[in-house]
Image 1 (cartoon, one colour):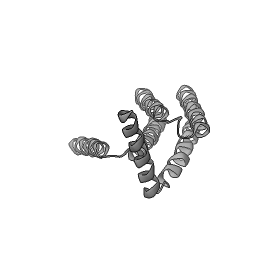
Image 2 (image 1 turned 180 degrees about the vertical axis):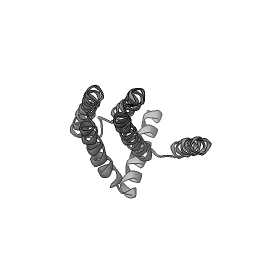
Image 3 (image 1 turned 90 degrees about the horizontal axis):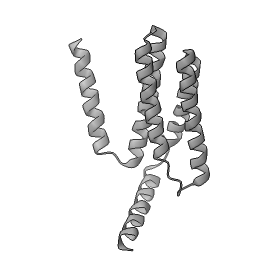
Length: 146
């Protein structure tokens, strides 16, 4: 029991330190990872008939997906943002359906969608991330000087 608490505390501190030093790209990766983790946890709760845990895990997953929606930047690629926003909305609807029906297959589908998005996100090269960061920094500097 104490070992489990120690591991959880270590994981929480590790994530906090990772977030504190993370660039925006890494924050999105961590959010996606967290949503997938919560969905898997909720699925396990369904299998164990832990309804309180299921509700908590799915609520947290939805909060994370909403944070991903909030992070979408319409100025960069409006069509892509609209598609992702719609997909995130679909995921939230499906999570709610799975929660009510206690259907693990639905959760597997949502996890699969998130894994596809995360896989594409993980493929972004360091050069592309640096270019985007530099462009964003220049835009901010221009806005401050204006």
